[in-house]
Structure formats: structure tokens, C-alpha cells
Length: 497
Image (cartoon, rainbow, N blue to C red; front, side, top):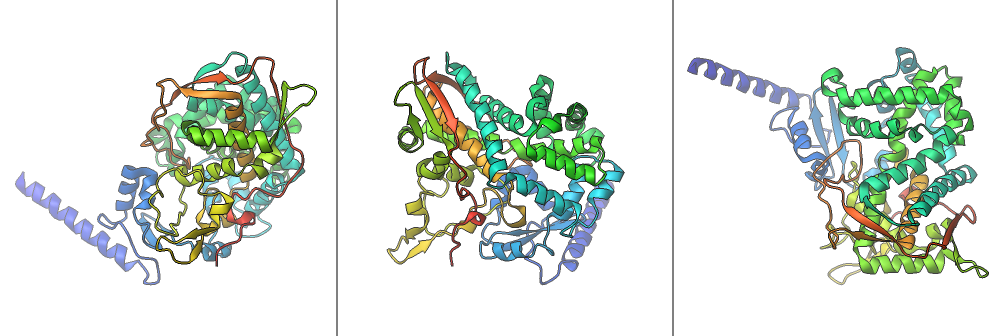
């Protein structure tokens, strides 16, 4: 028995030595430094599995580092000085090959469609580039985006009208998830929206929770059984949607995407698969973002009062002939409510958990706390150093709430408008009170890879208490297409020198 144990130990040591030699012999001197090499090719996986998305803070002091895995490696960039340089190399450092691979693993498209998607992935006229261009056209500021926003906000407002009659007691996260999901999908998919079917809405969490095993695609029958079943059920629902002509009556966003697929020979079954995958990007990060913004505003009485005051002063008009009609102008919510917008960006800074960069530009003891005024226009441009020296600019590149460069989220303006509209209406129309009498920030140890926001370990129970009489009416309008909200460095902010 002892000899067997000794043999096993010797074998493990030999394997470790060989892997260690292989790891370092295949690492080029010009590559960023290696990290987590205790168990070659596996340590990083163990750390990520143990720490979840908090892992990315582990080596934040390094400008750039290399993680090695079986068959591939990842370069992680922490320095905001390097980010613009990396983003400029769109041809040599590209997300396109990953998109192609994801279509095979995550969405399980047919061989024919995979070949279509794989054509010229790095070419400006290839499938991936064409799909990206189509998406950007419909989600960029302009009339098409305005139409989407109007439909989404109308759904939110009508839903809150029903609650405002008597109030309600709800689980806050579940309530927000439902409101955001339905507002988004109604605007996108139109009158035959698949999410009107309760079966579709109820199975969605099984699919959303299973992103990691679906992407890994290792023995999916064992490791991803539940999300695979959910995905296939969703695909069938989307197939029915297209078979019934749902896309014909949908938003320009869906119409143009469907036209793009059909022109390239993608069958409807695979269009359904691709759109089930795309739906993750439509709702999965907007929901938790809306939760955390509303939570922080409601949990801070001073912030709540400030947001209500600036909304009523700058974005809400009361009918002079009928004082019971209030109209909220979303154009002014986005452009004239700096406190609310600063809290919105701080929500992404504090709770966004994607592989993104945050930069501390001065000694700051509150970097880990929610500071709603951090992005106010008067504060976000200049700060005095703690030693009383010269002022510093905050580098907007450091804010990565919606990614950046070629992977900048095309739906950021749609999502931002929806989140701001929901939160603004919620705080104007309701007092939201926790059942326990005080707000206790939920823990966020639970991790769902693929969802780029902190996920709650428990769902707060709250009372929605109407703030006005039953005969008060609220309307929402968009007075015009204004310049884009500056939710990313690419939206017009001046990058620090």
C-alpha cells in the first residue's frame, strides 16, 4: 500500500514538473507576465471557480498579465493607458472569432449556419461585421431608437399604473426582473412577443443560470442538462414566433436582423437559435442594473429626496388646467437630472462585474463604497490631490460599464433609457419600504458567469406604497432626439491627456 502511494506521489510530482516546464517553455518573453502557476494550466480555473468574478481584482496591480489554460491563453489588461492602444488594433485583436465559436457552442446552430457565420470573420463585409453594423444602426441614437424607447417606457408606465391603484408587496428583484423583461421584449418583439407566454418567462432563469456550462460545452448532457433543456424549449418558442410572422410586426431591430439572416441563407430554426442567444444581451444585465440603482436611491433618504426634486423641477410638467396630470419628459430625465445620472454611473462602477477596468486616480478611501455624486459634472472632471497639489482629470476610459472599443455595447442607450425611466417613475410614484423596517444591502456571493452584475443571494421583500391619490395620472413623453447620453468614453467625453 505504501509503495502504491509513493508511486502515485512520484507520478504526480513528475506530471507537475513536466507541465511546469511546458508552461514556461511555451511562454514567450514578450508576453505579459504569467500569474497563478501553482498548478500549471489549472490554477487560474480553480481561483475563478472559488472566487467567481471577484477573481479579476486579484492581480489588479499589474498593467497586464497572462492566464494560461489548456489549449488557450488570456491576456488581461488593467492599465487605462493600454486600453485605447489595444482597442485600436481591431484587426489583430478581435472579438469576431469568439463570436463565431460562441455560435457553435452556446447557441448550437447547425453545421450549415456555422459555415455561414464563419465566412470572413475578420473582413468588414463578413457575417460578423455585417451583423454588428445592422445592430448598431437600429440601436444608435435616432428615430429607430426613440421608437424602441417609447414602446419600452410605455409598457413600464402602464404596468406601474396598475400597481398604483392599491400598492403591492413584492420581492424587489423578482418584481424588477419582470418589469424590465416585459418592457424590453414588448418593445423588441412586438405583439407576438414570446415572453407573453408564461412558460417562456418561467423557463428563462434556467437558461440564464446555465451560461457557463453551455459555453464550455463539455459533456453538455451531464454538465448542462438543465440549461440545454431550457434553451431548446426557448428555441421552439422562437420558432413559433417566426412561423407566425411575429418578426413582420416587430421593431425595426428585429425586422432588419431577420432580413440580414435570410439574405445570407440562415434557416428560421437557426435564426431562432441566434435570437435566443442574443436575448441574453437584451435583458440579463439591464435587470440587475435597475435593481441596484433603485436600491441605492431608496436606501439613502437624502439621495432619494434629491432625485425626486430634480426630476420634478427639470423633467416633470404638471398640466395647468388639470393638476392631476403629470407628464415626465424622458429627454430631460437623460439630459437635465445630473444626480440621477451620476447615481446610474456609480451603480455600474460599484456593481458591474464584467472583465472591466476601474482606475483610482487619487487616494480615495471610499472607492469601495457607493458615492452617488462621484460622476456629477462638477466633480467628475477635476479633483484636488490629497496632498493639496494640482488637480487631476478622471480618465473616462476607466469607466467600463458598457465595455469599449469594438466590443462597446450597442444597446447601451436603449438600456440606459429604460433603467432611468423605470427608476424615475418608481421613485416618483411610490414610497418603497423594506418589510424589515430598514434597508440591508443584499450579499452577492452567488455568481452567474455571463451576467456582468452582482447577483443577489436573497431577494428583499418591499412594500410599494402609492404616493399620490388614485385619480392622479402620469404620462411619459420624449420631446426630441438629443445628443447621446455619455455612458461611455466613446459617447463624447474628452479623454484625459
